[in-house]
Length: 554
Image (cartoon, rainbow, N blue to C red; front, side, top):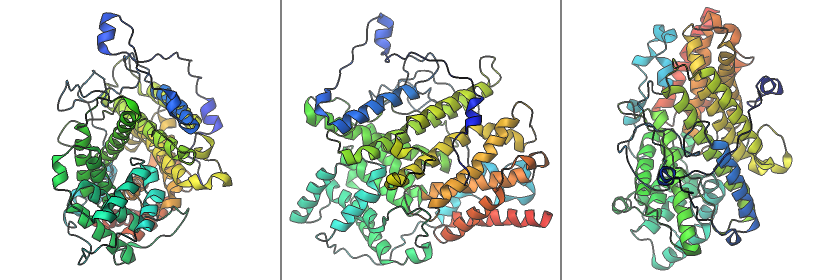
């Protein structure tokens, strides 16, 4: 299996980055007045040793994400314009002030690839419309739904959710949710946010399964008729009926409900409906009061708000980019300026879970900076060269890799940490997303016949990332989770790029060993999921047609 991590020879060729001295950010008012910006420090005595270790990691990640510009806020990303250019939303929004119109929008999607001239003879762009594929599949999948829920026998569903779903987006407090369970068991299911949240938890728990490396999973054809899915749909539809009143509120529990609804729809491969839920969840977060109250309870409430805000933000953004729903407007890649704070009492067993969460956020922020730097700046400007920007970002991805603790280290086989394999699987995928974004410009140049001595190295790297992505994701091809649909899309995109390169005479020698088998693996993956959604069947048909044409040409 190809290793997506930089090899020793690759990193040896890069110049060592100069050591930098970082300082804490100052607000605009203090900068104008020349005054020292005073920070309100948290009392570390309120955290247990595991929490303190996480806070140290958090400080390291803050340094890692700092930009190399003269931006007064080292954690900020230069944002694209939003609907409100001067939106003082407080601590949870970016403080960047440089807002310029992007020169080209960074759409790295299947639809963009199919519009490349190399595929003109196939006319794929005329037939492949992502949103149209979902318009035909908007009906409820479940049959008649019973309203009689056995809420006294849901402990197993509760446990499945927290063991196999919540660990990837730790936005809830398990002890607090247990209190909700006791209240509902005493008073019965109601029409409030608390009841809605529990129904969504039980919906997730009905279909959640542990990640098994190279596991085969249940085929969509059988899954759609299975008792677990019908039970999950019953819980979900009951929760959906309770979401109407939640639209008028902007509390934490309301945001958690909409987020969990979106995550469930993603797990059942309904991404457009999921995106709408994530948008509503993020709208709830925008209404949070950011004034932190004194005392442990106030700090814990603030931490909870930060966690759900970050989770909604990254889920909505990654899906928005993939669905290309912002094609008529200006793309906004702004992100909250903070890393979320850990819970007040972090259990030692949750340390890896929490650091995974922070590491994932760090990669999301780094990918946004790559998109901003490579696709907004004017590459013709004498102050900016894309090659230098790539070297810079390669150093930052290497630093991110070095920051991972042993339990989450990528590319390291350690039987003692097999329980963290799901975390490594997801982080590997996000890491490859960053690499794909870095080299995408050069891959496009190569496909369009513009290969030169200065970019040949990056074209090879970009094509290798396509093979690496497929081979690394293969272990989870048949596992159902929040990111399954995004994995299907990214692997299919990589396969299409490889087939596009195959059609270019000057790039045929750039393809890595095993590229053809990687493409065939993607077709097997799509064949497994094709009954779940019309867009997956379309992707399979496109890939199969290109493979048949390639075989005929040989």
